[in-house]
Amino acid sequence: MIRTRFLFTAAFVAAASSACAQEGVAPAKWADTLRTEIDRASLAGDPAKVAAARAFADRVASAFPDDGLILHYQAFAMYREALVSGARGGDSGTLLERAQSIFERSLAKRPLAETHALMAAIDGQMIARDPSRAMELGIASQQSTTAALTLGPNNPRVWLVRGQGAIYTPAEYGGGLKTAEEQLVRAIALFAKDAPKPGEPSWGKAEAYAWLGQVYEQLGEKTKAADAYKTALSIAPDFGYAKALAAALK
View (tube, rainbow, N blue to C red):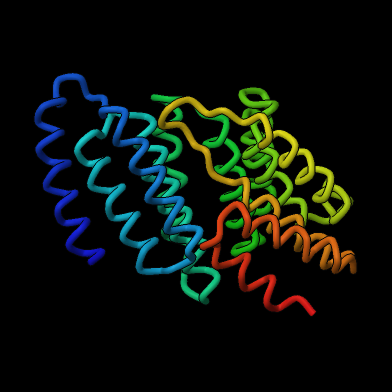
């Protein structure tokens, strides 16, 4: 079913691209479609669905290689696939490096606060893979974080990514569980007023609660953790990761 659906979509992308080739910009519906497909697959946490969404994004990007928003989603799909692969013990390094390169191209065409935030996150993950690059990538990550906050100081996804990173960053380097809690709570407050433009990123609200729940678990506050997971699932009932976290909480 997934294969048939995406083969049909690929043919439609090819037809649409010839009609829009001179503009070099994708119709707005493609950004919305990519956003929906990537978010649905990512929340499900199904490797096959995530891989299919990434392949779909690749096809749309090949049709519209100069569209900054489409490039963002191509890189974002790779990033999501890398997370799923890494969580299952796979080698996510190549996908992360490819995503970083495409994010850089996207920024040149369509600067988004989310792009900078995700680039900072990738740098952090690459440091975890190769600590010898900590100085080089640490500087790059901080630069991307600063750019994200400058471009989107009230963007909830920027604060969500910061909160995620703080969980794994020592307190002496600006992280720690309390810092993560503060940043995730701020992200959740900002999600209440979040109103992205058509086609622009809108992911993260359910994830913010899932990550906050993990912080509460590590702080020993299991009732708060359970409430956070419950809220995440009320927002996204098919959120596989939140289901697993809620089930594992004892």
